Image (cartoon, rainbow, N blue to C red; front, side, top):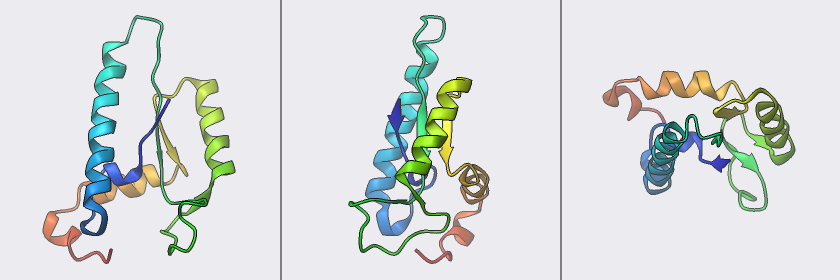
Length: 112
C-alpha cells in the first residue's frame, strides 16, 4: 500500500512541488503494480484529499476534507475488495477527473 495524494492528479501552482512528487510516486506505483501482475503481490495506491491531522493543523481545509479514521475505513474496505486505486473520500475520484481534464487556461483561473 502506498499513500499518494489527489494532488498528484494535477499539480496546483500553490503546491506544485508536492503535487509533482506525488504524481511521480503515483506513476511509479502504477507501473510497479502492473509489473507485479501474476506474481501474487498486489499494490494499492491510496489517494486521499485533505486530511485533518497534526500535519495540517492550522491550515485552511480543502473541499471534501476528511479525517484519518475515515481514510482508514475506506482503505480497509478497499483491501477487502482488492481495489488497486482508492480515493478518500470516494467522491474526490469524480472531482479530480473533472479537474484533470479542464483546459489549462480554465484550470489556472481556479483559486488556489
